[in-house]
Image (cartoon, rainbow, N blue to C red):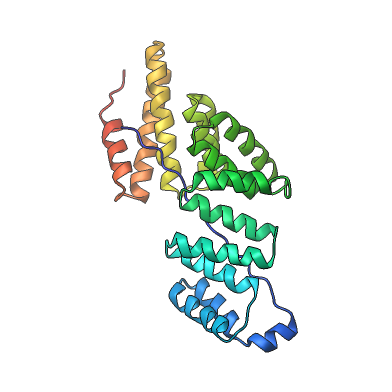
Length: 259
């Protein structure tokens, strides 16, 4: 069975500076919590933020930081609960809406992600991240053509983002437009050569091109794609040899022989 791998969306914490009077009230605890988050000490960061809330201090940044910490710990319930608390204190904030979509898609909550994206896009139509998350959720729900139109708009705002190209390649693959999928994923691999996911997905596209050219009797083209498929899946294996998905794909592709 073929397995496409989707690159996980990375939640980016946008830390804003507090006003000087807020710094005096909060002290260094919040900034220490941010530092703990940056070094992946998520439980310590949560502990520090909760101590601020216990002391009666409150800010949307506190709840946002809690949300991103819990997200890193794969705790969707607490992550989304806290991002909602942050949004109560700063409604329609672009960063918080974007963060909410990142959390929803990372935890594969496709329907609420689509609903939130459709409310957010009219507010921030030029935000490529929002459209990326929308396209991702749409593609996972089978709305490939609509997803493709959204990823095209997202690419216009962020043309060198390999995630956009990787998703575009996946969508074209689902639509069986392997030539365009090949172009998108080759471009993505040129921007990020250290992604096992991209090399795996490109190998699957080239495997499909090998088969389609074989059916058409185009032996030279078929052999070229087969060689490239084997090279790409080997690169994926070198980067992540423990992946069961990559192992399965590698075993299948290796079994094909030149014509």
